[in-house]
Image (cartoon, rainbow, N blue to C red; front, side, top):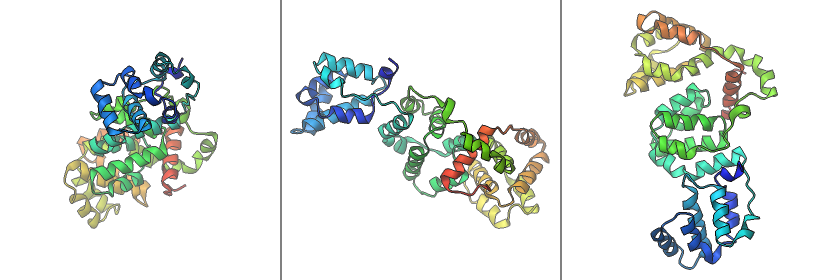
Length: 319
């Protein structure tokens, strides 16, 4: 029964294309499409029944209530019980994620403003500073969103689940609801494998980077950069040219993101981390923030996620 509650995969929809034929119009009506929609589909594919069936199934699958159970009952009502035997009920996480992204690719590309979403994904360690650079090197928002879609397709879990939760957090509730999948279970996918666990000791010197990144959203939303940057220049963490690059950003958040990008890329990141916390501690406004960052717990799962993320980008995280 659990499989019947899932959204049918594209692979099964392709199988159905060869079996529906002249029953396509009635199939669409039974699945909840309107008569007007069905006439439009017919006019889109006047002599192509297979094309009509494909559009019907594509429209239906985008509805939240589209499940194997609904499809199977509909096929039985249309005396197409033999077609049910062709269904595979494949429910792998990889296939489900690819399916959801493909279904809502246009909405993701056309609707999202992703700066805050990327902040959240970086905070959860599923997007690296290099990932963000690659995404934001594109001038247009649509092209940035396409780059994010490509990353989601390649990275899958746990990146995908963090992305969906971030959509909900940032006001895209409807899209988040549509992108959720019923068999979502990160109990195993987000944990480090035995191989990864054995290698964690090699990257323990990266704890300070992980602490900074786990507080990414908080830092970007909280600080004013001026005195902090002054301190970091005096401490030889940043240069005057880097300050000018920060100042060239338009909003305070953008300036803070540029500062964080520099800190996380720094070749002397441990020193940069220490001096950054020292600069926060010198300002009573940010003293609690400095303590919070330095006391942030870094778990083996955090380190595995961090390491996996950098391995996926091909970036040398000091391993």
